Length: 209
Image (cartoon, rainbow, N blue to C red; front, side, top):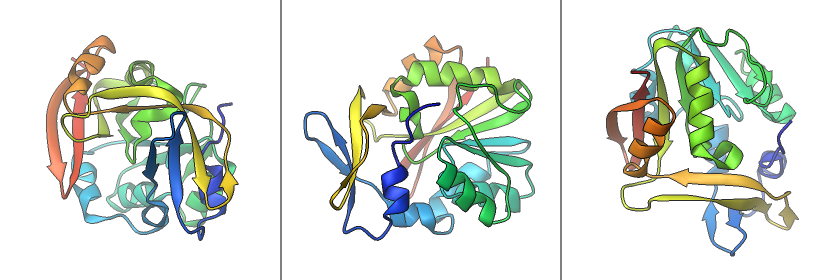
């Protein structure tokens, strides 16, 4: 099973700040409070594009899994973290603890796969991750993925989560912006149907041709 790199942030929610720190020292603040809250308005643009059974990959504490379920969709959250899965289940929705590259329920029958909150970075290789998403989808299914804003390109490397004085383990991570996604998706056998913005966040809808 993959390293549970975000366990530190989930355990120490009240630390002064939570950072995703690259090997070269570059850091990004993690919105841990947002993860633990209710689904924010920007996620409505994602939920509205789902019309059938949906997998929420890297579900964390479950706010999006809840929003999808409340929209009347059969939804399963997936996370490598036992704590994340427990938090999601405590909200009354379905979640399984699994590495998303391992066998998952109903492979090839999901209408939608969702990757929010930077989860395109899972595994450190967006191309491999999108190929895995394609395997999970029913013909005509879609991947809804949150991306970096235009112009930042792509990045792959090692990171760790730092929460106050707590330092998590190093693990592979990646980023992908709204321009780089086209080539990466095509290499994974997907095409970009739409790139859209909600509030100050960017998303793309990818389809199986």
